[in-house]
Image (cartoon, rainbow, N blue to C red):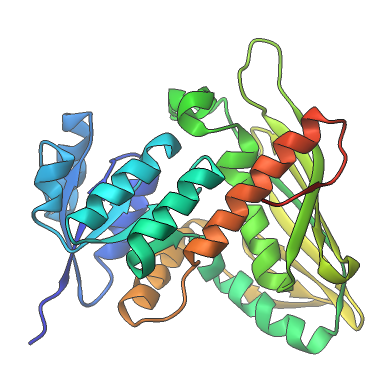
Amino acid sequence: MKRAMRLGIVGAGEVAQRHAAAATQVDGLAFTAVTDTAGDRARRLADRYGARAVADVDGLLAEVDLVVLAVPHAYHADLSLRAAAAGCEVLVEKPMATTVEECDRMIAQIGDRLHIGQQGRFFAQVSAARQELERLGAPLLYLERRSTDYARADVPAWFADPALAGGGIAMLVGVHSIDRACWLLGGKLEAVAGSVAVPAGWAVETAAAMTLHFAEGLRAHLTLVDSPDFFHETTIICERGRLVIDGSGLTVGDRRVVEVDGDQEYTASFRRQYEALLHGQPLATPDEGRQAVAAVCALYRSARSGGAPVPLR
């Protein structure tokens, strides 16, 4: 019998907990070890799922085949390279890194053992939307509005630290919105224009508006805001109808074609991402991860220059 792939998770925060919960539902994957700078947090996560808490990254790398990096964004590049050098497959949470240069270094040195955690593609309503778009004709207009809540009691302090997060809401959740637009629309992303809002006393933006400029003239308009009320809605107007993706399903025209429990679906999206990886099915590629980071960096340059479109690097 083929041995299960041994999974190690670096980090034991909220996203790591979703990874662990999902991994235990996947045949052929064994959640084996976890490490975190807060050792008690790692032990709690390990005890919950029958894994082992280890003292440091090197100890974890010696025990596993696949490493998930669920740590502050600034550590993604160096930890990915360490994991790959130890012979592990690497699944790095979004954003891939905080700069285009770091992304390029990861691509050059890790190659096809590097996978980007864009589990949002694996929501049932998003996968179904991609199929529906095939019969709705050419997309004419793409609109998305999404929130996150910086005031939540469990939000890590590093979310508001530009040195660790690489930016604010655009780097934190905007990379998901950018990846969704690129994956659903399928066109080449050429430039980004937009603006950001940095409140008094903050070092990162908590709101952003951007327009993604694709080849052939298509535009995607994304709005990200800090709000205690969660919302995530994508509307795509096409030649022969429209669809709306929200946190609990998909509506095409006046038909509700997918309905899900939002929290359960969130964990299920991580499970499907693991299943795709184990079966050699497509995940977000390093080039696609780089594109999302390049788009956020272009947004920041655009915001500094008055909102003019900035070509991707």
